[in-house]
Length: 228
View 1 (tube, one colour):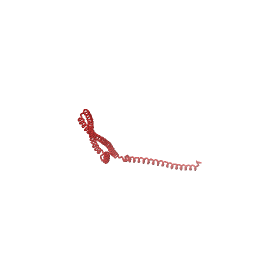
View 2 (cartoon, rainbow, N blue to C red):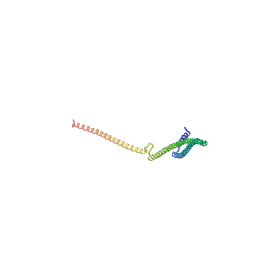
View 3 (cartoon, rainbow, N blue to C red):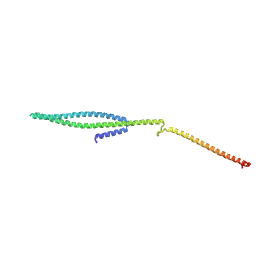
View 4 (cartoon, rainbow, N blue to C red):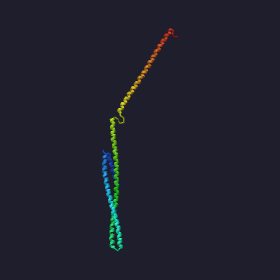
């Protein structure tokens, strides 16, 4: 793992810990995103400068290479023409351009490595930005859920709704009313039952008296000879 990657992991871990402990996570996220956006813009400007510088280095070493080859051809022409001194001067220029080309090519290759690393860092900065931005949306939704829950709780308390989701006082009153109705119905049933029992008892007593009187009357008629 590279040092930059380890540092980035430590930074993200520290930020996540701060986020969980913060009383105002959205404000902390906005502050982080603002700083991150500035860093991204600075990195993009630096990347453009590096790309422009690398392009200059490449053009310089290519031009030196081309000039080296041209001086070598000029030295050959001078030798063919018997101009040895001119050939020597051309060869001397060729060696200078060859060295210059090698130097600028090395600088160009180094700059390309730096550009690749800078591009990777820029991509990581943007990835971190997107990750934190998504956390912002999450915490905003989380805070909104909390706010709505608090409003629901206040509304429930205003309506007299208990923890179980039912309004206890209203159901207490309803329970009392139903109990009263049940008591009245039960009392009425008892009264009616008692009335029926009284009527039946009265009927039985009257029947017994009637039977007794009937027996007395029959006995009298038997004595008088009317019944045999």
